[in-house]
Length: 276
Image (cartoon, rainbow, N blue to C red):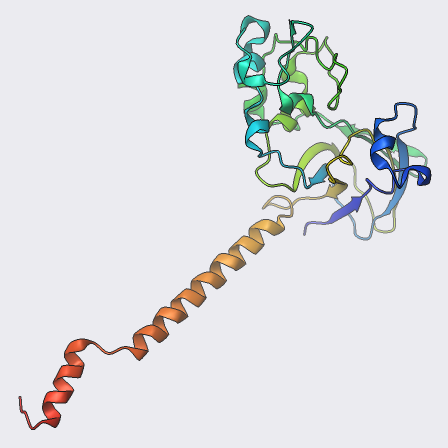
């Protein structure tokens, strides 16, 4: 059975003095972005325990946003010069940006730590991205260059000494979501959590969802042989099944109320004294 805990933190992690102007808070570099809260574990959660961040009201499927990237640059770096598809984040001071485009520029950058009792739990952030993406879509010899150096910072930064193929948080983020509410894998906890455990979460509330009314949630979940919890798939099956049932009932009633033309004509002929 899948055990899941979902906690919304975007409003709670804003100081009371900024509650009336949360946009000013997230843009104020001097305001502390650290936040902590506790999660009570109601049921035993067997490792591996998956950690996701969930964003709501975030349209990664917007046409302009999706197109603002260069897949060839992600694979070949500065060796590929055409970054026209990355508008409006192509270069800074005439120098190309790697990786370019709005998708990379808006990289999610909240961070999470987990403490159980007096011990901090290790979060495994390896192998969170698809292996095919790491091997075939992001270059092993392509390094971030001139990234987030402009006056307007979109999201997280990237270590220029680590190749793009090893920036798994970026690779996860670059696989854009189709729906305005989505989850992306942050990491895994490799030890069990037991019922009545109290897990303390310490996070850095860096990512700006306040400008557009977005919501941020932390999701901690186990999985089964069928994968993680997916309410959308269940609702989709119910909707399609119910629609099919209603349509079949409609056509059944329509068929019962109507009579074929030949049958009506034959009945009328008998009433007039005809015989076969």
